[in-house]
Image (cartoon, rainbow, N blue to C red; front, side):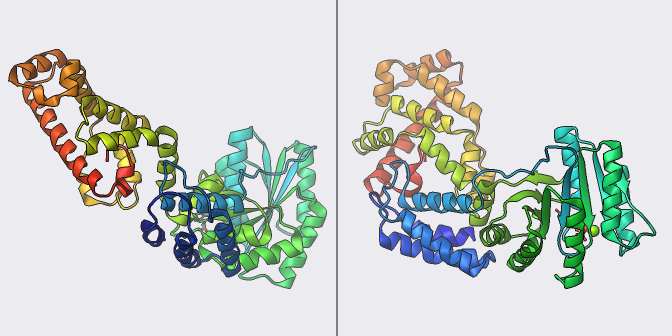
Length: 439
Ligand code: GDP
Ligand code: MG
């Protein structure tokens, strides 16, 4: 996915306003990419429309190129679509808050009941009671009991009652007696939505009057999950979604489609089989996951925050005129350092994370400190005119900075090489990577 979008956006360079041509080229690829991520067709169509409207004629921010600007817009829209802020559970005014878990078989309902109980224990000191409402397989009740034992949370179950609604009713009485603040009801699932299941769930809903009906959806089922979500929601009125198995190799399309089609917020995500593997849903993180842009977006943010484009232009001018000196060099180093640890920044650039050259290249923060020490030991004249640095001056600088002379020599040589190289680059095309300070 990321490769596609990166390819699409690579050619979007230059400044000024985002053109129709820029957008058309990008949106064609973004459309394909989203479809590949198994996002619902109609959702994709609407999304592209929004992007076109949003992006066209937008001024490209100084610190970005049009490609980055389009990514930014796409990311913002994706985030918006999935709900800008993290959604939370409904809480009842009187205890207990009742949570009813629904979903197809094998999506992770029972596991999620346990995860949620643990989460509530940990974050709110809650004392939940679990109700075993999947009575068709004895193993299902045992599974929940085991989870209850692990968490030291009571599980209400009955062996002889065949009416699930009755069991739930009794379980709620038990919770009242024990003053449990949460009741989480596990329910049965089927391989697909069928009438008897829906009728049963409706009856459970009626007797328990839940504050939350959480639909558990397996993220790996992709677009099929959309129809299921719609089905459950129409019959039961789902209040929120838990997207499980996001740790699997999923493309994230389900999150986008479910939200767009049902309008129901995703509240939590399941990230593994363990009871600790439940996380809040972060629309912004899911957006960048869907885009597959890794931390590219973070890089854009940081570049915007920390980098002064005008400064860069000045430096570029200086390099062109070959007046780039050690003072500028220090400025550049500091700009880069402000952005964060160097090797992290390098890895955030798309394509760099897996670049074998980068793997072998360790960028040493200490090295930067040494380099700075050397430059600070130079006189004003030396910094402005690196060419005056003869051997005796170099020895003095080495002594002043407490670095070996060979290191001073090496640094000066590297500086000159960098200056020459950058001069060539700036005379050619100053775009793409060279938008980043120090690149
Ligand atoms: P139910 O039929 O809906 O109650 O589903 P279960 O809770 O029994 O889970 C079915 C399977 O999915 C089990 O093997 C769980 O361990 C697994 N599972 C549930 N949630 C997750 C998750 O977030 N990640 C992974 N990898 N596996 C999960
Ligand atoms: Mg189950």
